[in-house]
Length: 281
Length: 116
Image (cartoon, rainbow over all chains, first blue to last red; front, top):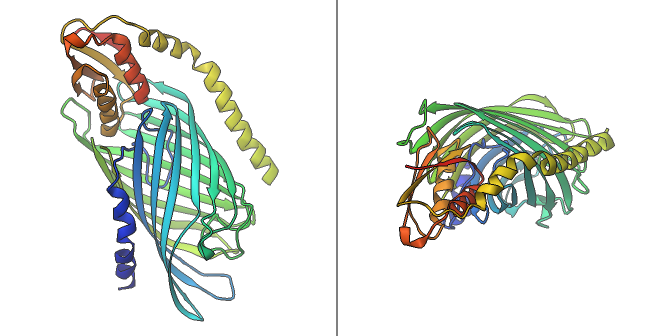
């Protein structure tokens, strides 16, 4: 019942961005970056809706938190090999603690990312190998406990290879946290720096071969998303997913399940469920 | 440990920037030449062989960027072969260079231009 009410309250935050014109990015798994960008002069809009459950809180409050995060990403193609993105995350959170149940709606910190792709080798009509470097800053929303109240720069790189029906993405990024609170409920947003390491494998289950009649493709995805914080906390989530991509839109769904949790300084992630929509106009 | 990771990440970023400037030169030369080709399209159709369109959204990206070229009236992309059939208004004088530039802007690689 609680999850249902969370989703219903967050629906406007999800639906409003979809009214905007957009184009989209492809060969990118749900929670792992890819070395892909929109065409020069193009915008694209992407919306992800995530249900995140955290628990085993080491703080004296012993909190259990369910949250729904709607992240809207707007990306602009500066050049064929350069892009600029802005992420806006809206959150609805239900927190159970010894003090009772607290429900809040807020805005997490925004993220501004510049991506440059110096390497692109298109081997044939389908196959491609690419590398992109990216960097940016998380901008504080200033919204109470939803914000770190600090500007946090980050830098990273991502390698993408598409070979026939197989796609691989490998990304590493490092965030210099200049603020943040102890026992933070947002993984990687505490006072210690955060190293993210993400891998994704995509397999095109249909069609087996592209042709002139191809109008859509379906992929099975498998991701491994890791987060190491310099306070010693380390967490890895794995998850299967599915991506359906037509010529004008894409739908995606994935689950994140923790397999490594060496976390003592913040609540642990119990489960992440993500739905996404990308639209091309 | 923090300093080591930070320096390593900055080194990766700088190396990729420098590598992109230097290593992309030879592949970029032929592409740049193609974009300067002011040969008009002969007849109503021309076929561009495009590489790197690994997904339906990629094909639509190329489709939309080519359709933005003044004088292009239709685009059909064969994702299997990369052959992109472009129909033009002959009176508009669309050039090979304009089409090559559109493919370049879309983020993919023009392998060659063929007669239909």
